Image (cartoon, rainbow, N blue to C red):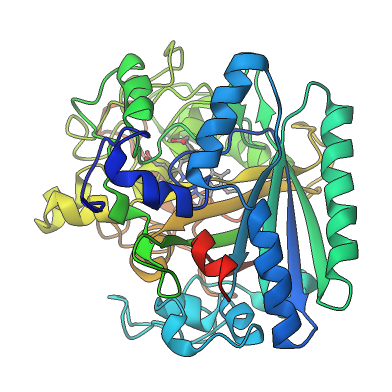
Length: 480
Ligand code: HEM
């Protein structure tokens, strides 16, 4: 029997999926779980034949979904650490390898690249912009040079050893080895380090200090079981079928699948963010009907308190687990969790069904798999603004156009989503460079429509660069 991509809740040892999982790269259906990584961006310089031979030889080092599972078992058995490796290519990478076009991944955005100005304007519902910028409203001129220039591919290395020193050593040694291997084949244009930050409860956080990585589509039975223990899924079903994230790899064989990768280096202005939250809290306390602090204002921006408590569930933090079993059915007017809050923009949990009468399956099909990691300075209280700190945002999806771009363009950047005058996502919403931003409307009191306050909140996350990539099957990498 062959694999069914509509299936959810799959056991990792299901015999129908063994061939697929052996050929599929790891970190797609389940995060690799290591706390440190290196993202090695490269541009081919050799002739296409030499380039292909090197990729074929490197394919043996790439961690498959099954190998990742074996690594987890071996770690549980004897705490044995192993390196994790992903390999991905941009469209220019396919070109540099001289792969015939019929074997290229199809997605329009992948084909054009993230810097492109025109891509998919025709396919997006808000065709109101002239292409002064890409559909994400990025100011590409401000990007780091490694991303303004051609990126052919990226190797992701991840490791979590017994000590920080051991981890650094293993990763640095591997980067040096790669540099040697790539001499005459490719130029390494950037080695980007990423690391997981944790709070006092050992939960993963991002640089503004909020627990992150709580809500993600879940493919495997074991992961759904974890979510079940954490509060169930009667009000939000996190299970997703494989076709949320996988597409057939046109360059592979019958069991070959891959995923599209969105990579964005997002710098965070921590000091500026919290200063503005103080101002928002003061304004809400003066004009609204409730005295609030910056932490509460932050929860209105994010949709969850710093400890992960959804603000749609209660007006203060303190939820004891990483709760994800909620929707906005009891907050249809956005009076607890504003419509513009980051989590509500990026996962409306039923708002589009109510607002546009569109089927829940369409809203669910927009979901992305987040596998990002932080970068830069670990200090969450820096003295100055725009320090070297932020998120290496990585999303995986079956369609860049219908999932990531739709989410960023049609939801986060859209002042009219989900209703007129909602405003942009205060965390990651972007308007065209130089365009005015309309204030968002904030509930003056939790769950109460009286005393709404207009206040513009944006501009504390800046894109330093990125690219669209494809993570192909291992069969493809082995048979160029
Ligand atoms: C959720 C922070 C960028 C999509 C979250 C959460 C936090 C967060 C704190 C809540 C925890 C969770 O549910 O996992 C950030 C920061 C960003 C950033 C600081 C930039 C520096 C993005 C971008 C997108 C995105 C660019 C996509 C356009 C999502 C999604 C969720 C989420 C889909 C889950 C929402 C849900 O299912 O309830 N983010 N994020 N994030 N974020 Fe972001």
